[in-house]
Amino acid sequence: MSVLTDDRAATARGPVISPAPLVPPADFGPTDRLEGWTATAVVTALAAVTRFMNLGSPTDAGTPIFDEKHYAPQAWQLLHNFGVEDNPGFGLVVHPPLGKQLIALGEALFGYTGLGWRLTGAVFGVILVALVVRIVRRISRSTLVGAMAGLLVVADGVSFVSARTALLDVFMTVFVVAAFGALMVDRDEVRARLHTAWLQGRVAETPWGPRLGVRWWRFGAGVLLGLACATKWSGLYFVAGFGLMTLALDVAARRAYRVPRPWLGVLRRDAGPAVYVLGVIPVALYLLSYAPWFASETAVGRYQAGQEIGVREHWWQPPDALRSLWHYTYKAFHFHSELTNAAGNHHPWESKPWTWPMSLRPVLYAIDNEGVPGCGPASCVKAVMLVGTPALWWVAVPVLGYALWRSVVRRDWRYAVVLVGYLAGWLPWFANIDRQMYFFYAVVMAPFLTMAIALILGDIAFKRGAGPERRTLGILAVCCYLALAITNFAWLFPILTGIPISPNTWNLQMWLPSWR
Image (tube, rainbow, N blue to C red; front, side, top):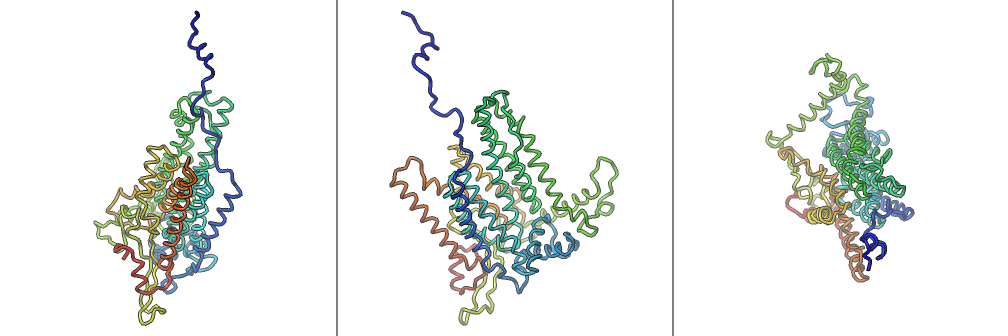
């Protein structure tokens, strides 16, 4: 009796069928375009109604409130002085110019009024909602989950107030979130190109895999991150965080498509272009934002070479203009670094980063409780407070814990990328705890928190393999939570917008002692 060899025996038993696909399914983004844009338009319209409602109020007797007193007049000077600030006595000129240039656009249309200096921020606040809808729709592959994320941003007190005040944080947040969205599109495009290469049999032609061509969405992310840095220097945290994230996504993509040596492939094919796009391009955009400063004869710190610093003496030294900008930047950095509690710098509304995830110490932007009519013999209270909607922010700790578990244990890339965005806006502030800090630094964390919550709501409502009863209960729970968040936002609306309320109502609004 003859004995079959191993190969002939395997052939006799039939072909071997893999229990899992050799490569990921051809899923490179949501396909319900009409529904997607309809949902985006509806949620964005709701955001526009809330952000633009009575935008010009309140003011401090016609002047800006809180730190608007720095940026609104600086923007006005930019508008009337050929794009430069030439008077350091006008305010603290310690931030890059782009955010103030954007504020100046609104002032050019409506003058030096509350509506004028807040208009551009409100437009950006509406854009932020649209971006979150589109991004969450893409990473979840669900238009409904994307719409829920947008509704949560609409109902978030932090995102709402930041869009209605002339501060810089809303501009940086929009640029950061837009860059994040561009990298999510880039992830899908990379996988689509690798899928094509796999179908054509080109994946294993070299150990490091195929070239991916020009990645325009990643290039766009570099431009947007440059704009973020040209608004506030904390944009640098996202350059670093998103740079590592996009390379990690590249490694995961090359591994998924069976590239023989995916890490070497990323180092050889992707790392160099990533450094160019997320390193050189942001620096170029940052310098470009200073174009009026370079062209000016009177801008703050423009001609430091030969005065506070020496002139250029060697060919390898940068031009005097760049050296003057570097010195000016150093002085601004020195101002920030010396703004510490140890040096005696204290503010009644400052906070430390461990209080930010749950909005434990908000910021009171404005309050008037003397002679405000409408409350009988007592004065009404008019206030604007930057505070997170508790239904969203008070669940931050379990949300972040769950996102971390899904990222590490379940290897769920959706939660991992959102967590990168959140942590890039939070963890760097722990490096110098003694520094004077405020809760408005957490504005950039808000959209990533809502993204994580929306992903969790999607998992609850649309759990895979769930029966009809479980799905009904999940949808009911999600609807109840959304209703709670919106109701919570509506309850806080008076202290987010400066609507007069009675002292008793004001006391009811102060849910925590640390809010006072």
